[in-house]
Length: 335
Ligand SMILES: Cc1cc2nc3c(=O)[nH]c(=O)nc-3n(C[C@H](O)[C@H](O)[C@H](O)COP(=O)(O)OP(=O)(O)OC[C@H]3O[C@@H](n4cnc5c(N)ncnc54)[C@H](O)[C@@H]3O)c2cc1C
Image (cartoon, rainbow, N blue to C red; front, side, top):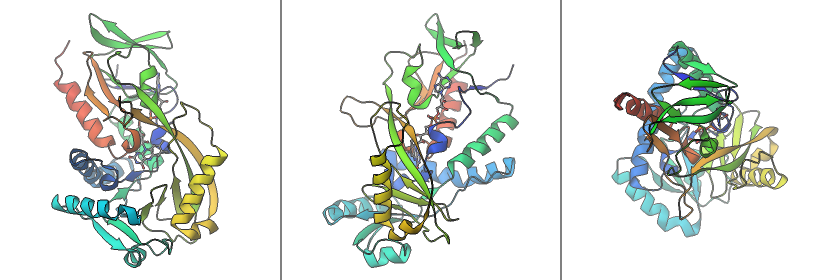
């Protein structure tokens, strides 16, 4: 029996992790100093991780320090100045630039943009490639990946999680069980009631292809983002919708994402439409409705560990989450 078994009802990366835009947008996405420090550390860990995954597996995960612009409205200028001051005080590269300077960074930016924040260290990966690399790397490390295996129950004995039941037909016992079911985490029977709920936030995205490639920088507006892969492909996203696990792409969703993306970089209107898709960010519910922090590490139930609730930043936080969970599992007292 392998030491580590991944149980996945479909195939690894079937859901949010392959669907993500792949931004490592630590400085744009963080909401406070603690989050900023954690996110920046996670982003910085990617350079070495990408190199070692490539060496180990031969798969290029598309890690690029492409930098990011975040468009600032006239009403947002004061907040943008404060953000630059506080990030610079922590030794990070951030600047508030006018529209002319922003178009020097990204010539495709719309002419109406008057100000933007520029974060030259923000980066990106290509999520489907990351998932391919991780499948190869984990298999080589002896991890068994069992696709098509739905966990139908967490098994508890004497106040401890001791394994799982698969489709009610097979029982697997384990010293440690890690709950990593993304936006379905709260739906797994046997999950302790006291854990915060993880709920799905649907995002609709689409891919365009420019020929030749023009966009170079990630660009956020208040309403959308564009993520150029560097080879002509541009991922445009994304809606934020509380509609449960409804997967459909909607006319309004695609219309909004396309319209807002073309407003960022008008020549995207000439690009080829390649495809659109949707998936679910796993968001930790809180009493005031704001997204809660991810659930990572030990849980109230001995034997059960958590790696879920990463909402908009699960790709960014993938490696630090894995490290934290591995440390928690190895540090836990044995049965
Ligand atoms: C539109 C969109 C854009 C995003 N963009 C970014 C981005 O740019 N940068 C970033 O850092 N993050 C981004 N994210 C967030 C990121 O994708 C998620 O936070 C992360 O992928 C969540 O990973 P996960 O493994 O928890 O969930 P998932 O990738 O959804 O994996 C959970 C897995 O559990 C399986 N599962 C569920 N229930 C069971 C069961 N009972 N038994 C067995 N298997 C089960 C599912 O099949 C699924 O494969 C984005 C997300 C979306 C939706």
